[in-house]
Image (tube, rainbow, N blue to C red):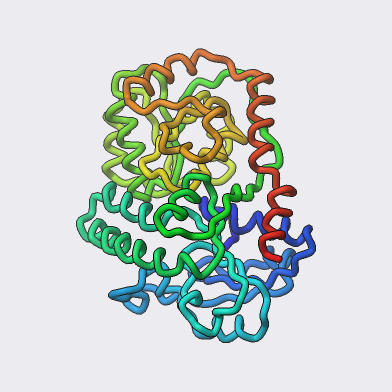
Length: 361
């Protein structure tokens, strides 16, 4: 479901719709609905919108097919798609079950890769603290690697980073094009001046994000005087306890959209290390378009072209050193202009929309 924009993965999905519409593409949108309801906003950009149920829980489990794929296998959807011969853009490996259906062998099919799924799930297994979830993520990772290899020759793939494109070419010999994500921001709206806190934000119920926040608290900010705000959805009790034990740290649990954007805009330094090097980090792009200084590790920007917009540090001591410097450095109009030039060259929606339309037709 590409709307509302309340999780990172929805940005690229939804923001493609008006761009493709402007290119003259008539969009027949098929999406899975599980809990967020039908969205009239989608009707503004699509010729028609169809909703389907996802087979969650035991119904979506399989010994050979990844859960994210099996749970989205829907006969009603396939029957409707067979009524015409339109090109198809599949969002994520999640929606690719039809690639193994002989009835679609002659269709023009493109797959938008959100990341390298088997690597993503392998990293989730490494950061997950629950043994049951760790076992599930490891099993899903193994299934995904075999599955991704099995579909690699059956569609044209569109990656969100150059690194992901190279991985698919090297591992699976796939036909892949790099196309940057589509974003809701049209210009850099960063505030010049100086803030008085560092910010880490994200969905804190995701193990990877919790581990990043915990690492910052334990390895970086324990000895720093710089204030740190950690903000996001559903933090665990463990994370709450770590924040309480860390001087100058504050937790903002479940902020509303406006409150979160205020935190983003007024922070002095956005600290966004990543343990997972696949895909693009939408929270980093949010910080680059709306915030001041951004400090990351190499995994957060590898293959994205964003290195020139960020400070990069791959160890706790180096991260702490750069935080100390950036807390004292005013964010200027010249910095905003340089960042805007880089981001516009990568995330030009009109140009990227023309490229995507060319791939479709």
